[in-house]
Image (cartoon, rainbow, N blue to C red):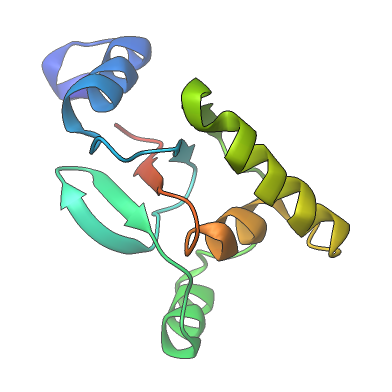
Length: 117
């Protein structure tokens, strides 16, 4: 995918959505840092909340507090439920989008690919 295959970013992203993302996906993110979770396909991770050990490793590796999330795609048929959960998290004071989506990954099917797809 990506530079190696001569595909544009848009073509690579569309391929990831249509050919590599599992059927249950609700949110797909292109993240500027390496996503943390379970690898489900080549360059595709099911994002999971970090345990304390993973969080410490990510902080040591410089993978936390990225300046921006990157690109997000929301499955339109799942948007009402996802947006309600995001709204509730925002009302609870969780204003960092990266951390909010990571914490919601227990409840929503959030997948991510690194920005260099």
